[in-house]
Image: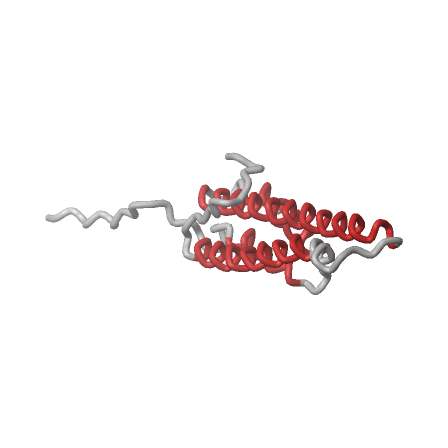
Length: 151
């Protein structure tokens, strides 16, 4: 009489379907709701807001939600800072609307706006990569995100 063959072992934790943190990353697409600046700020806050719900869904979902929250908060912070810089530069140049500046200085508010557009392009790329990696069960951490939330 022979003993039954033991089931194969899995070398790493396989999360159940839906518990990979994919939703936390996919919420980054809310930034493309056509409400400039407000949608981008709210997206980061929403990405961070779903983090507590993923803490109980396994290690992979927890890690992906934490990294998505960190990136979302980084994106929101950069949006606020760059938009305030653009508004500040515009107010400085126009002196409250009473003075006109030379041609080379009038482009100053466009610098933070251009940087914000670049950050928004990076955001969509990071969101796509994070969503795809999470859907495969892998943890994705964007190295340039500020770590607002640790473990």
